Length: 147
Image (cartoon, rainbow, N blue to C red; front, side, top):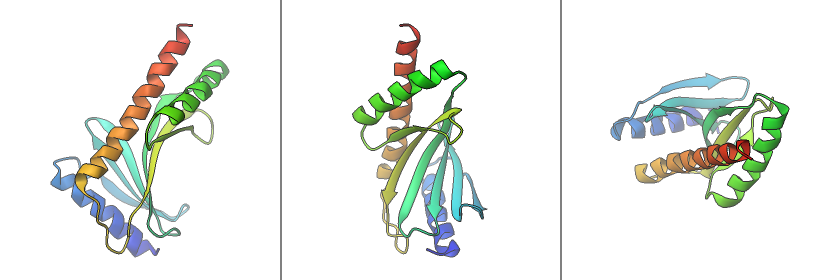
């Protein structure tokens, strides 16, 4: 996928958000990652949609850094919570950031970048899947902290 196609794909999702009455967000080009990134908010939570110019039709939707990790003990608990959430929640994946200092939720999907056809209701469901996974992670972490 070229940069133009990746940017057109993020513009497609930006327009979809606008039509649904949500914050249109901001599109930027990440030259290091070779991605077009749409940063936006829905109901106060921040998300990033990433279209990869090197991988046709692949899109990653992220709810980044929703749970900071402040200690080794908390990281150990987070690994348990990640495993439980990933086994129980549909479609979303939870993982630690590359520095193991924060937790991220992602939904990845394929779409025809040349002719994107995704109902807004399905895209909004992806966001709900991220929120559900993040909320489940938080619930497990709270349970672990009381044990």
